[in-house]
Image (cartoon, rainbow, N blue to C red; front, side, top):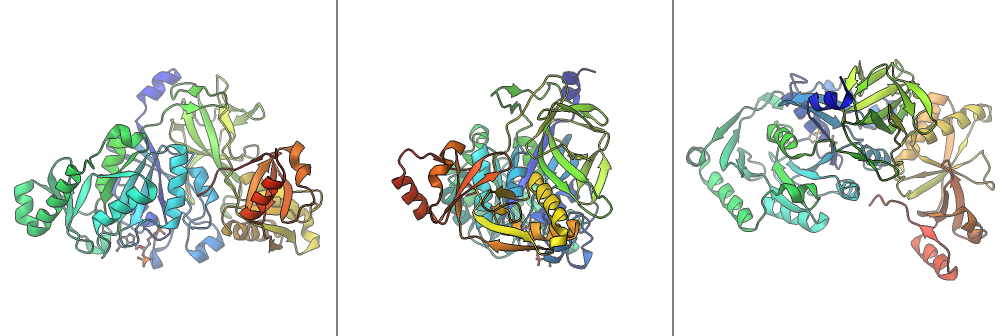
Length: 526
Ligand code: G4P
């Protein structure tokens, strides 16, 4: 079978990630989605909570201790004739760079908002990345079973804070805290939900027409209908073109804990989220999904757990058909790469992948040659643009405290740099013994220290530096910044020079005093 007919015959894909602030309910929603898609039969199996925590997605001691998810992987399931790939994102507010990269591998994002808290800082940051990348966003207002804000107030805040026009597809029947169901605004019907014990099973749903709805929910239905009419009068109805253009966001109301609204989310993902499309390459060409196989690496990880000590590269399939065992070309080195051990990975659970299609995420084992941003392909050569590094805002020097462990330290730093856990910056002045680490969030430093200790047995000391922003500077201009106070220039692994500044005032003064000096901003995380 030729590649193009194989892709055409593949089950359609939907690849998305959930963006949210910690505690908004991402793990609970992931679990609810898995429950609805029959991946699991009872909630608690994927991201177990409390004493049910047997969980698939944590791998590091530190992660367990904090109860957060640092790694990223993909959960794949079938739903309504489609294959859905939910790419997991790290949850902690500080540990963000990884999350940003995950967003290069998805076609849509679900923005999960806590009904009582509204838009929170991490959600806003991640939304900016989606906007920057042109990823369409579906909004889910979660925890409607608990007292929360007025739904119109939530819609206003979305419109004002992120400049997206909310177009609710459902509208809640019952105020926050008294959630019976939703108006399905496009069908004009009442979707009534019923609770199950502890929310462990899928919540039964009834679909009632307007008369039956009024009889069943009385004044709550009348209120919800009034809300729906107000939205309609205001033109807040779904428009697919504007949604895909990143101008509007369809909104759903849900309770991930009770499994309310989860089926609607799956239906909306299938109906409205875009399928995988062509991927733009370094020359500005477009690799069509039915072209020969190609994929790009968006994450590299090692030492995931003691039973699988290896290095794994997560890649998103962009075009063609992936078949385990095929020998692909690593575009960046021109070398062949064997995919004998490709796996589908969700946290600790791994299964061999035999075939994968555009939109799917594959884990390539023993991937010591692969780096974040690399391309692999078969047939017609292609190279995709590298993933941009986000502007670091936290800087610290790192040095080994036990000099007998220097070699391990050096090896560890090199590996974490390659994995993109943190950016490692060097200069002649500072030497090799205490490179500078640059991060988007300070928790990346803790991850570095913990991994150097546990995986390389290299205890380290981190000392924060007083810089707060970085700009790229061309090598031939770097000397112009030499010897200035509050400024330092260092080099990154990719050969870029970064000028660090204590604060924006220092940066402004330097620019004022050095006409013609060119400093380039890096992609901002917010
Ligand atoms: P996260 O991954 O986004 O960090 O959030 P997570 O799913 O862990 O949920 C955070 C807390 O919010 C959990 O409570 C969870 O049970 C609760 N939660 C999530 N969705 C809903 C919802 O729709 N309604 C209500 N009422 N609560 C919700 P916890 O107390 O931290 O954990 P646990 O004691 O429930 O295990």
